[in-house]
Amino acid sequence: MLLSVFFFVNGKVRSDVVALCALIALVLFDILTPEEALSGFSNSVVIMMIGLFVVGGAIFQTGLAKKISSRILTLAGKSEMRLFILVMLVTSAIGGFVSNTGTVALLLPIVVSLAMSAEVSPSRFLMPLAFASSMGGMMTLIGTPPNLIINSTLLNAGYEGLSFFTFLPVGLICIAVGLLVLVPLSKIFLSKNTDSDSNKNNKRKTLKELVKEYGVSNNLSLLKVNDNSQIIGKSIAELELRNKYGINIFEIRHKESNQNRFLKNVTQQMAAPDSIIEQGDTLYVTGEIENVRIFAQEGKLEIIERNETDKKNKHKLEFYDIGVAEVVVMQSSALINSTIRESNFRAKYNLNVLGIRRKTEYILNGFADERIHTGDVLLVQGSWENIALLGNEENDWVVIGRPLEEAAKVPLDYKAPVAALIMVLMVAMMVFDFIPVAPVTAVMIAAILMVITGCYRNVEAAYKTINWESIVLIAAMMPMSLALEKTGASEYLSNTLVSNLGGYGPHILLAGIYFTTSLMTMFISNTATAVLFAPIALSSAMQVGVSPVPFLFAVTLGASMCFASPFSTPPNALVMPAGQYTFMDYIKVGLPLQIIMGIVMVIVLPLLFPF
Image (cartoon, rainbow, N blue to C red; front, side, top):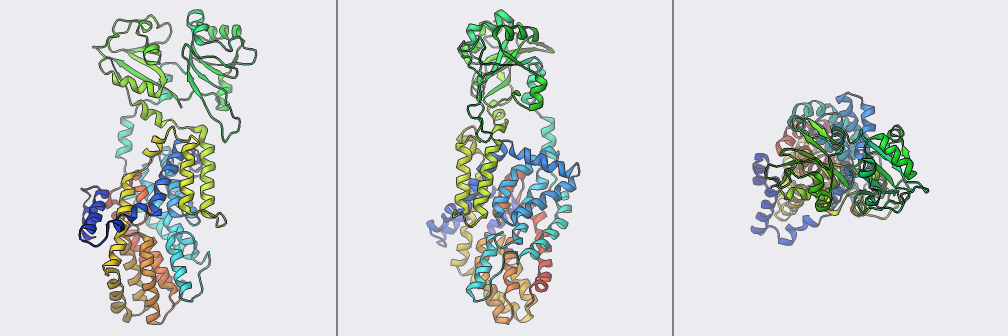
């Protein structure tokens, strides 16, 4: 355990590798059997974390996080301090009724989106978010597992149990102390601006900026295919739009098959020669507006006014299935001196060329017979997969950016209501006792629903949201508590504690139990620590003849208010990758908070629950 701590603090070896090495060492020295060592990987908390990564990713992917964060941002205004306090208070309030792991998983994508919108480093908020969820968990009986453990210990010993809100005064004091300490510490140690600055310097054009630069969005008209339209059932090739009208169909958006706002779907189709026009389609057409009007009149199509489109935020240009990208033509390309028409881009790659950028000149109309020069930049449109395939032919051109990564950034905002409904159902299953579903089951149901309802583009996208480093770190460290128990280390510790501190009075013994529990939680999970120390605290109080209630509260607080380690609680591990924190970041911010919280609680607990 000491070697693990050394390497965690050193930071030169990845934390998950350190945890696995510790696990293997426990097996090699016959402290744990292989089955016991691997038990962490089947633990419900670890499985729940995997599911919560998927749920959180879907909340981000559907744009739900951005919508919620924009509401919070309006409350906070432009004040970073007000935003910080608001995040802490909202997290604490939710953490009192939902598991701290669930709270962080739900709020993590929202807070990241919030920080990006406010142009603040997410690292400033994410560690305080994890800490606030633990503090909020102290407000109610169900807020965190250690609370339930000490209540069970009291009942089993024949004492009166704790009520739902017995914890409330303790929780409120925790939140107050946390705010006072974290405001300056997070400002000093967690405001990492290096990444955000580099992102600003290396910022690529967004897809909307790209189409605007080439004039595609300004040169775009929307036509609705009504019942009496003359072009229903015809293919794009039959219409001969380029020859007759000098215009081009950018995209066909099919009518939503289901009008239910929670189940609506958006189907985009690239305008290929064999694409058939159907009743209810919306055609995205590029070209001179007068030519578009002539085509609309002859084909009996309805022109959708752009100001009406913008107001309703409907029929706007989106890139769910169809994207755009820039392709730079290389000197060695076989396309040099051939025309766009001769290059057969559509036939070979199933892509449309929308325009050409030649140095500072943009060629947007009548470029079918334009000859391709070295260094020309072509704006191409098609499915994201087909654009990505262009990267395989590096002798001919270079695709600017990474198309599949760009596609992943496009939020599936039409699925936001679905994601919101699934999230609410998950929280309800976790909060209400009359729903006979275990929390881990609720999370697994929510995760699979996010995938099968289309909140992700594909299953692979869902897998990519899981941070396996955090999962392995927690799962590999969990058996450490079993090793301490099997070797008698925990029993030795408890006996030493009572024999050395029992004679100095209840206050000193209370402080000893609190800080010993707090120290142990830095290396094993808070739940395991509470199970370990609750009977020790009870017997210690009985030996000195005082009420066990403040001692048991010292156990649950020492176990839950552990901030100096990324693997003491699942929330601390959850925010580690997103905040790009190191082990030392937890020491710098979490350790002072942990010590101050301990000192305050040793003073306050005897006042709230007299000996």
